[in-house]
Image 1 (cartoon, rainbow, N blue to C red):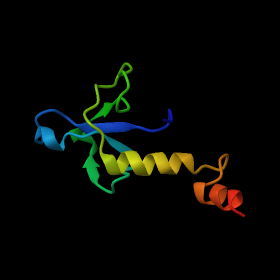
Image 2 (image 1 turned 90 degrees about the vertical axis):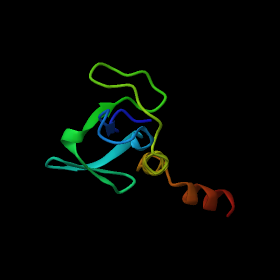
Image 3 (image 1 turned 45 degrees about the vertical axis):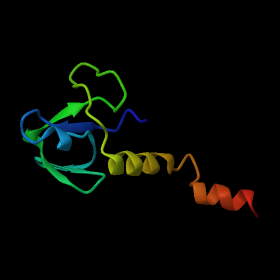
Amino acid sequence: MSETIQWFQYKPGLVGEAQRVTHCARHTIGDRIRSWCRREFDAVTVEVAAEPGATPSPGQVAPCGPCVPCLLLATAAIEHSAAQPSARVTLADEHA
């Protein structure tokens, strides 16, 4: 994915393991982090994680399973950049 995306997850012991999925940060305001799946997290309750499937860099922990909505929405946002036309525009051009 992109080097600018920050992945995070709850610290161990704060929630059940089923809720310890790796989320993708969309906005950070003060000590609150809002994920792409529209959940808000208190910054002191989370840890910085590597991208799901990647080896952690220094300062990152091994990621849990990814939050599927975060993964899909962040991927779609990255693929829809100014340098790359949206899939809808590409399909429209191909079928014109």
